[in-house]
Every structure is written in structure tokens, then in C-alpha cells.
Image (cartoon, rainbow over all chains, first blue to last red; front, side, top):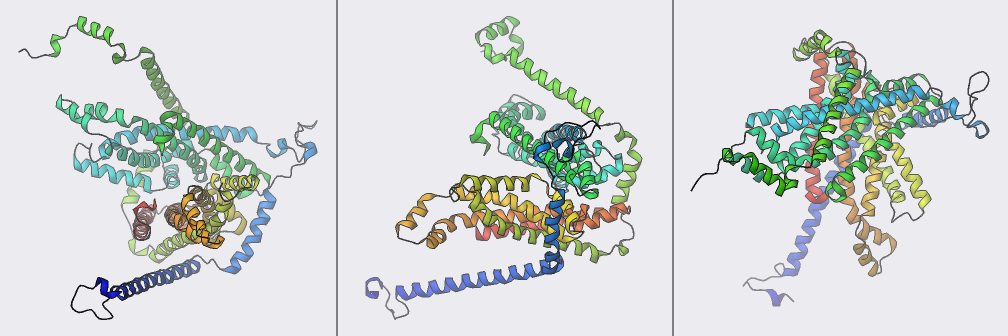
Length: 310
Length: 285
């Protein structure tokens, strides 16, 4: 077998191709084994460290898990079928076990959810506007001066790196409790996230229209307005709509630190009551988020078609 | 040969051009619609800013200025209890790791029940999917608050919150990965007479494992980000230190902690990017 392929003068038993191959293969398996074992050891060590540092020990878990089920048992509504759709009785109260009893504060919740959606909408519009301006400054192919681009990119990184609820915490201190702090916090975060996406879209745009406008003497603004913007506008709109979905989720929780919306009610209900009010608010929030997601997804698809979205 | 200048074009020329190419000058209806929607957005914006009392921003300048200066000018740096701060950051990473690991394990099991091609019984599939929707639909910080109520303050609540929301996210993405596998490889392995175990091992696993690992790594990254704020509701980690220092008015320490967290998150992103590139390749998505 070896005689077919040998072409050098020295061909011993360890030089024939089969044993070379076998040795090479054994070496590769050994190397791979070493890497896998090292990784496995690292993984286990990291796991042990994590368990130790977060005190995630079995006894804590054993006492915690039953309490979770107990808690979820207490917050479930005790609905009774025979009175489920009953109206208020003579005393002006809903009978226990009816939906009306469960959602006694329905109109308050609805008003807060309306406020939450408006907060998200305003923050999305403001954030999109700021992000459009900043994205032209930050995109490497569009920026008027390189240092402006670098500065804009760092600024956007900061804006999206800090969670919005942290901005909300700071802004609540600065402007007081209320939805304004939430709107501003979500605006800042949305500007950072959208600015990055927008500037990436700008960087992928064709520069030929820009060259054409430059050739007829267009200013930087005109180059961007007539050269880049028409190419990127559909993508911008779709990203802004997608951001609106995220902002609705965010504006539902910034209330935790007092920045308006349903979050304050949610936090209050969960912290102070352990009855069916908790599930009442949670269910409304989940429903709102889901409906907004579905609507916005439909709008995005009709805007630029299913193919180009992915 | 004369140069064509803009001055040489008369109104009559423009009118003639407009008549020849009516589309090129814009549709009157579309223009009106565009202007109207812009006007609507502007009116809404002005109304909503009034609704949210934008005026408070002007009154806030004193407090905001005090806050800003305090954040930039760091005082008494020797007394900052760095050990506490870094222990909080370590706890955040540990929470994210444990939560993602547990979430990955449960999601692996649930994903096969939520995927169309591995779960033919529609009732079970839809039940699992709706449950995952609830897991995802409720924000992680809300889960954090719920678990703080259920098991008390501390990192256990945080781990559970990350666990639940990661399970929801990962199981959905995993089940999509399972649905998108290439049937031909499975058929190929089956054609060699392999048993079920080997079909899964050589037909399914090589296709889904890289995607799964990559998704879990992403999930770990995003969990470290979100775990930083779980402490705001008492669910352990660095957020507890942030809110405690904030309530005490130590804004310089808050700024320091936030900067540290940003650096740590950047390092984790970079590290998991390396792992992804080393073991999965660029294609791993």
C-alpha cells in the first residue's frame, strides 16, 4: 500500500501516508480533547463561583420554590362561573368572583395604560428625530468631520449603554415625579439605540447620489437630504416602528421609579397587595404589549414587505 | 456652443415640462397627505409635551445642575467601599450566568414541544407557546419584583427573574431554529439505517447546536445588561448598590458604578464575541 504513494528515498514504517495520517488524527483528537477539558473545567469553575457568590444554594432554593407556588396561588383571581358576568348589586358592588369584582379599578388602569402608550409614542417621535440627525453625523461615510463622527458615536453608545430605568431614576430626581421623566428617559435610550441602527443603514447606502449632488454644488445638508435620505427612509420607518414596541414595554416599567405610566400602579400593587389585583394589572399590561406588537408588526410588513425586513 | 443656465429656463418651459411629465413634479394628493401627516405629528408632539408638562424641565434647572456637578466632581474617593461595589458587579454577572444556564436547560426541553416538526399535537404546542408568550410578555424587572415578593430580597429573586424571561426568549428562538433545520441531512442519516438516537445525534444536533450555543451566549450578554437594573426592585446585584447610593445622594458613586458596569458589559460582549467566533464561526448568527 505504501509503495504506491512513496516518492522519497527514505520511507520507513513511520513515514508511510497511512501512519502519518493516523498520527495526525490522534494529535488532532488529543488537542481537541485538551481544549474541551479545559473549557469544561473553566465552565464548572465559573458555575461554582456563580453559585457561591449569588448564594444560590439548594437549601435556599428548597425553601424558595414552594413559596413561589404559594404566592402565585394567592394572586390568582377566584372567579366563580355562576356570577362571572354579574353587574353591580343593590349596594353598588360587584359580587365576589365576578370579572367586575376582579377588575374593580379597570378605568384607572385603562387611563394609566393610555398614558403609558402616549409616553412611548412621544418618546419614539422625539427619539427618532434626534437619532436621524445624529445618525448622519455618526455614519462614517456621511459625517462632515471625522472627529464629529467619533464624538457622535461615543455619545450614542453612552445613551444606549445606560438602561432607561436608570435615566428615569436620575430624571425623576431632576424634574420631579411624573411622566415627563419617563418620556425623557425613554427618548435618550431610544436615541442611542436608533442612532446606531440608522447610522449603520446610512453606511450601507449608495454614495453615488451623494457624488452627483456634490458635483452640482450641493451643501452637506443637501447631499444628505437628497442623496442619502430617500434611500434609507423606509428602513428608518421600520426601525422606528419596531422601537415603538420596545418603548411601550419600557414605559410600562419606568413607573417603578416614579416616572409615570402603569409602572407605578404595577409596582405598588405587587409590593403591597398579594391578591388578584396583581394578576389584573399584569394581564392588562401583557395584553397591551401584545396588541401593540401585533399592530406594529403588521404596519412594518405592509410598509416594506416581508422579504426586505429580515 | 452656448452653456445652459437656469436663468435661460422660462416659466413657459417649466409649464410645458410639467404637462409632458406630470408624475415628475409630484402628485398633489400625495404631497397634501405628506404635509398633513407631518402637521399631525407636530400637533400631537406639541400637545403631548404640554400633556406631560414639559415646563417642569425649565423649573428643574437648579436640581439638575446640582445633580450633574455632583456626578462629575468625585469626592472622598477613599471611603467608597470598592469591595462592596465590585462584589455587587460580580453578583450581577453570577446572576446572569445562573439565570441563563437554567433558562437554557428548560428552554431546550420546551423548544421541542413548541416546534412544529417535533411536536405534532397542536394543543400541547399552542399551550407551550402561550406560556412562553407570558414569560416574555412580562418584563424582566416585573418578574424580579414578583419574585422578591415571593422569595424575599436578594439574588435568588434575580436569578429566577432572569431564568423565567430567558426561558421565554430562548425557547421561542430555539423552536424556530428546530423548525428551520434542513430535512435532507436527517433523511440522509436515516437512510443509512441509523436508530433514533443516532438520527438526533448526527442529523439534528450538528445543525442546531451552533445556533443554540450562539443564542445562549447572546442571551447571557443581554442578561448581564438587564441584571444590572434588577437590583432597583431588590432582586440582588449591582442595582441594589446603585439605588442605595442614589437614595443617599451619593451621585458621584452612582456615576462611578455606572461607568464600571458599562466597562464590564463591554468586556463581556467582547469575550462572548471571541467565544462565538472561535467555536461557531461567523456563520453561527
